Amino acid sequence: MSEIVVNAVSKTWGGVGGVDRISFKADAGTLLVLLGPSGCGKSTTLRLIAGLEEVDSGTITIGGRDVTHLSPAQRNISMVFQSYALFPHLNVAENIIFGLRVRGVGRAERDTRLKKVADIVGLSNLLERKPSQLSGGQRQRVALGRAIIAEAPVCLMDEPLSNLDAKLRHEMRTEIRSLQQRLGMTMVYVTHDQTEAMTMADRVILMRDGHIEQNGAPHELYNEPASDFTARFIGTPPMNIISWQDDAVLGVRPEHVALVESDGIPATVKAVEYLGADSIVLCDVKGETVSVRQSGYCALPTGSQVALGWQNRHIHLFDRNSGKRRADSALNR
Amino acid sequence: MVSAVMSAAEPKAARRRDWLTNVNAWLLLLPAIVLLAAFTHYPILSTLYHSFFSLSRGGEADFVGLENYTYMLEDDVFWQVLRNNIVFALATVPTSIALALLMAVWVDKKIAGRSFLRLAFFTPTVLPMIAVANIWLFFYTPDYGLLDQFLKGLGFSGHNWLGDPSTVMSCLAVMVVWKEAGFFMIFYLAALQTIPPELKEAAEVEGAGRWYFFRRVTLPLLMPTTLFISINALINSFKLVDQLVIMTKGGPNNASSLLLYYIYEVAFTFQDTAFAATLTVTLITILAGVALTKFVYLDRRIHYQ
Image (cartoon, rainbow over all chains, first blue to last red; front, side, top):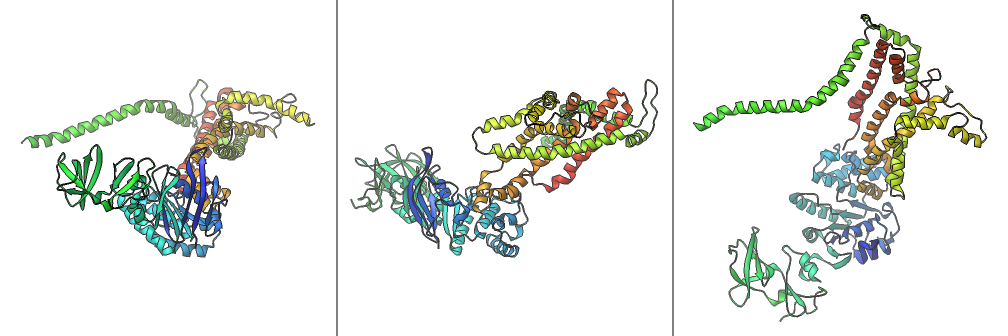
């Protein structure tokens, strides 16, 4: 099995961008998501694992083998690009078997494997088409087919769903996840979409400005954010962060804030977003915005005065300057 | 009541609008139509017409049918210039295309002095053919020309490059390739830059080497450009004859004459406009054939993005 170990890897372009001494491990057969806003270094990290960029320092091993200075081909990986990178002059079949042809795999085996992969990704009746004759979702499947036909133990994905519409994205998400589990691939998946990360990943690495902000299972990032950045990045709507005593800020999730009859923090309703299953009430608390999740339809008029309350076990405390989570965070008060 | 009146008036108004749109469109096309008709279509038809008539020196021109064409087929010089032209095309077209591709691939890379190289390759294109011919005339001059001086330094004796029927065509071909390749390079360079870099990376991950990628991806994706360039180069090899006027006047003994230059000589030196018309029709037929091959045959076998 192929686990990926990234150890103290750095890469910059003349001191600009890139990643700074990052270390993490992707266990064999799991799906690791690299998550973060644009420019955080997640794509760079993926390209370093792929060998498309050369590390400045640090080592990368795949399946126990040091691949730090090997070419992409020698690393025994497959990759799906954001733009899919399909060869426009080749038809679907030729695109999928491109790598097999390069490696001189015999015709008979090529055909068998093509048939199998085309079935898996559902392209069997489109094999003669050119990429320009395919929809976005179909192109995505071709890219996926090209990645899995190599039967490489490691598959790298660079924002593979960002060019699809919302419905298709949801479908493909489930499909890629089940494919990864069925084939037992170690997958590193880059995205800026926290929903994708939360729903697909075994482990999420949240990155920011070239370093790792938090590395953990999706529920850990949600329930125990290591910093106010994580707290703000994970969850829709994100965690409310409001000023607290001295040098601390307080975080509380919208679903943990309640509209109370008495003894609450006074607030003014600014707007209500109705989402169907629930509504998000946006309130103003002394110049800061707090969102409150109410189940069902909520008909509070704009400008009405309400009181907000929450339970102490739901609050998170962060240091105002460093943004780091405080050890006594969710203690009873 | 009101709606009934409206609906009756509507088709009329719509027809009027359509008519105005049409008039507008024709008016916009008019300048181009007039220019094309007066200076391209009419001369072609007039040339075709004259090729079926005898030469009229002041008097009446008689209809002679295909006599001019029979005469052409029996004319040794015609066959020689046609043969020259085909040899010239075969020598210059593939060479300049290959050279253009080589230069484009080279200056597409991230190398020091890339802009300077691009400019250097493109410079010959900017020069007028007349100037180029004069420069190269000096290169080829026997004894004190650049080429002979260089060869003398190596211990060879002087040679009359443009005066020798066995070398004159090669000399002209080299010069034309030098002049044309830079121009074609620009097209290749533009095409190379439309190929997304991820394709290269995807191929790299799949283990394709540089040469494999070039052969299986870059070249096929450049095919539309190659076709465009080859048609242009082919047409140029038939229509660019400025250098002959400066350098050889078609000599020695028609060894370097090309079809268009021969037409020029027949029409303006020998004043045989009827025969010149016949030759012109032949030339137009050849060029039209080249263009048709592109549109009908080759276009279908090439991938366009």
